[in-house]
Length: 371
Ligand code: SAH
Image (tube, rainbow, N blue to C red):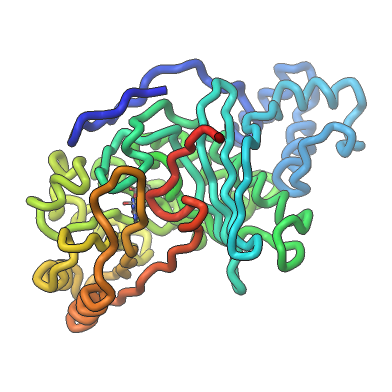
């Protein structure tokens, strides 16, 4: 485990650790074919394996009856190792919200959250064990960064959710995942390569990937400007969410410490550029913290920064985290904040607090060891 960071301390490069075993989901289709050939099999076995994993969502050799018995076990052992072990599952909302605590091969802990709504199923996934961004109001940041997750470790969270839904384990009958948000533990843009690989596996059509629409995928960032610029050139039209939380540098320097590297204006410029290239609306995340960032003048300043842009503001009533001295805004201040933004013609919604009672809402994922 990592040490608790000092106030404002950033960890941009993840500690070097032993890597998890290679998995099919780490690889492109061409790499999968090369990998099976390396194991002494014909290239088309990679297609068969991909179909089992990404289309049929199966990982058990017994079900892969189109593969000869002896190669089956070997291929599964070599290319579909089990990377995540479920340690604990907690549900609320009559089972419609479920948070899973996962143990990785080296004992690192991460969490993912599945949320079923009448019209969609959203999975919130982690991209790092811990986080190095150290935002003082976020539980994940307080424990520091343990390590980056691999592409397959990220994808496996989604596949596990997809399997649970397909099996009918989530109330409401069998279903499919429609939306993925990279809003679990970690800063996705600080684990760029693995995250972009994971996005490919999610959106590439089956059996190459899971075939989830890129429109349903959101990558959330504190604002690592060079990575945002790079993402805009990937040809992956995913939604970009920027965790802004303050419209002015003075306050944002303390709430989102990366602001000491890249200022509000630079982050927003990168975001508008992203929107221009991808034609996707930018999501601005803004946790409303009582008497800290919820003043009307800040709403006004935010409105002026965002007006006329391809943007949507998500206001998040601050979720409680252990040891935090802050709380959510008063309802009347929240309403006034919304009204100010609307005055500037900026689309705004207040996010629901799904999963709050199981510490599964925004900023609450700490992967605490089960008691
Ligand atoms: N590191 C990325 C991905 C995490 S997303 C990012 O920060 O964007 C998690 C979202 O929840 C971020 O917008 C984060 O700022 C927000 N958040 C963190 N702590 C919170 C809290 N206590 N209450 C409400 N939102 C919080």
